[in-house]
Length: 116
Length: 456
Image (cartoon, rainbow over all chains, first blue to last red; front, side, top):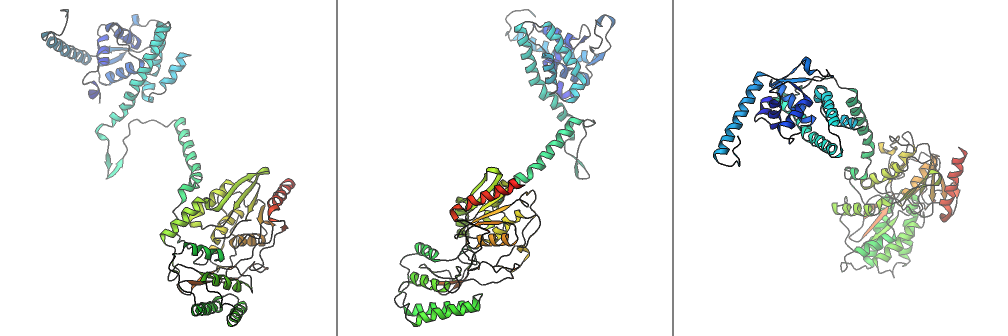
């Protein structure tokens, strides 16, 4: 089931995985990070966010973790999520697929600037 | 406030989502609401949330269906089986909702079953038109005229002395052979023979007129309105057969047009029910209408049947309506029928409340035949108070005997045992308990009912 849901990887799931690369985050943290990554274009609502988190967890791509001492802030009830190794693998594969796509796009000169 | 609203929205999600992520979703909302202040951002927040619900709800519910996967049509020993997706106890909410819905559905059955549309064309009874077979409606002079009007012109036979003689002899023969009361039959025969010998019919050269004259003579000794000689200009069918589908359809559409002669079904002041019924139509076509009328009057405190213009009809309908007035099966005397299982009313009728309510019947001299049976039986059973005039007095059935292509004679025949002390109403009519002119009778009955209800 999860395989079917994640192939192809939905952009929300990709963004969530990407947001967890540098540090573990809680739900709202992920949402803000995703918004930052996309210049505010993607604002994940609770339904989409936690729906994706559930799918990703079931597929073993992310997992819940105890918040670290620095992450506890003042609310320890929040759940934190971290990338698993297979999650990192999938993310890399997906990023490479996108890079391939980008190379083709550049070869066809459909990009305006040369900024990649 | 807005948090509560969002909590409501969250309840739309399936339970597995709420138990897994409900708190977090709410937390996320709280965080966003805290950070995103100002009118524009608030509006954007809510638009986001609504769009999010719209998109993710189907996805969350779709999860269950995907869980079924390939296992969907499972068979265990050739029998379809359910796949258990989640093992959870039913909570109180769904159980009580399901219970309430089931009760509602059950409670709606009696109502749905009584809707007129649902009931027609179910009965398989064969309809017999009253003018051909035994029926309460007497084939009288107007009936003859009716037949004439419908007759195929140019098909009239010459009516001469020989034909007259033949018809008269056949009439006398039939009356002697079939009439209930042999003494009266003899009187009739004598009367007709005397007139014939005296040449009283010689100047009658028209079949219709002859039928009319003879009918008068037939009725003279006993005022029996069911006795009649009938002339039809069009050829009469060989022997009375069951109604053709066409005739039946005609009767049905005519009855539907007239609402089965249920002219008025009303609730008067003081919660007195009022039913003006102008015939007792065949239950095959009109059962649903009759039941609907009685159901409509179910909650009245007293009921008035207005039979002042009731020309009679089918004894089965009188029994059907009377069934509502008793709480146990009651012998329903019909002077036309030998006693059978159907001679009892169908009481008690489920849900009926009229069994112990006072009943008044408003009568006139135009209350005839089956309508008189209704009056007579309820009066004898002390179940109704009759208000108005003495009824017409036609009790016996007219059975049809064909004489030739254009003449036939209707003769009342059967004579079942009358359980009541009084003779039936043949020739005499049913006496009212309270005399009133037809015009004032309804008013009088209403006053009686009101007085009775006040006493309670």
